[in-house]
Length: 416
Length: 93
Image (cartoon, rainbow over the protein chains, first blue to last red):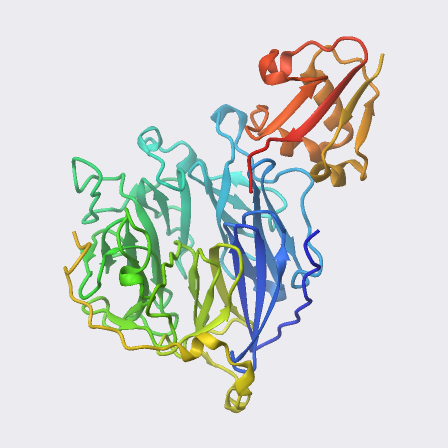
C-alpha cells in the first residue's frame, strides 16, 4: 500500500501545484512567498494522471484529476479538501455514444469554463474529442461539432495517440475557443462549438509531403495571454510560432533557440509579450540540447529568445519536459514551474531568472499546473513572507548548481 | 447450478469489498453473467469493458482455466457450475 499522503492546507496567497505523474498525482503547496514547499502524495496511486485542474470559481477549492489505468480505463475524480478525500465515480462519466463506435482511451485535459458559468467544464480526450459538462462534472457530453467533424477520418495519431490535449477558452467571448489535436492541428470555433475550422496557416508539417496542409499538423501546445486574446503562441513538432489574429495566420518566431522542437509553451500571465519554452534536441532525441536544462524566454513576442539557466543543472541533464509539464502561477513576479520525465520538479519565483529544485525522485512527471490561491491575476506574492530569510539548511541543493549558459545560436542544430 | 465471479483487488471497492460474487441468475453466456454482475455492482462495468461493450485489452476473463479470448469472447457458453475469474493482464508497471 502506498503511504497515506501528507495533509496540506493552502490558503491565499499560497501556491498550489498539481503534479500529475505516471504513478499518481502529487499536490505541492508553496507558502512563505513561494519559498517553502510541501509535497503531498501520491494520490490516485498507481494511476497515470495526464490531466489536472484546480477550480476556484464560486468559492470552490476543487481539484480534478484524470486517473488512468492501463487495465481499468480512465475516470475523472475530484477532491474538495486538498486531497484528504477523493470522490471517484462508480460509473465512468465520460463516454462516447454507442453510434460513434469510439471508446475513451484517455483524458488529456481538464479546463474549467467561464467564471460566470461555474458548473461548466471541458475535457479533452483521446480519441480526439472535446467533452463538455454543464453540471460540474456529474455528466458529460461530447461536443458534436468536433465528434462529427468531416476531417476526423483523416486525423492521424501522434506518438501519444490521437489526443485533444489543449483547450484555450477566449477570456470574454463564449463563442470562441481553440483546441489543439495531435496530429490534426489547431481548430477554432466562433459559434460556441457548433462548428470548428482548422487554423494552421503558416504552421509546418515536417512529416507530410505537403509541408503546409490545411490540417494535419502535430501541434504540441498553444498558449494565450488573457489580456490580448488574439495573440497566441504555438510550440509545434518542429516549429515555434506566434499569431496576432486569433490563429488565422502563424509566423515563425524561432529566433535564437537551440532547437525549435519541444512540447510546452507558456504565456506569462502578467506580460503579453513574454512567453517561455523548454526546447528539446530533436524528435529523434527528446532531451534538452547539450544535456543542459534551460528555459528560454522571450520578452518581445518571439523576436528573440534568451536562455535562463541559473539554478538548473548544466551537465548530464538528460531531461524531457512534456506538453503539460510547464506552468505559470498568476502572481507577480510570475512563478514558473516544470517537471521532468525523470521526476524532478523545478520552480522559479522571479519569472525564470533563477530556479530551485522543489522536489526530486518523483515518478515521471506528465503534467504540472500552477495556481495562486485566491486567483492571483498579477497580485504581488506575499511580500512580508518573502522578506523572511530561509534557513540555509532547507535550501534545495540544486539551487547551488547554477551555471553559465552559452549563447544560443539560431539554426545551429535541429532547426528546420 | 450457480455461477460465481471472482474479483481482483482493484474491483473489490466497487463490490462492497467482496472478492467473490455468487450471481443470482442463470446466465447462458459469459456476457449474460457479466451483465448480471454489473446490474448488482455497476461500478465494475466501466472498468472491465469499454462503453462499446468490449472487454478492455488489458483485462482477462477466465471461465474455469480458459481465457474467453480463445473460446468465443463474451458469447462463450456457460456450462454447469462455473466460476468466472477477472484478472488484470500481466502488462503494466
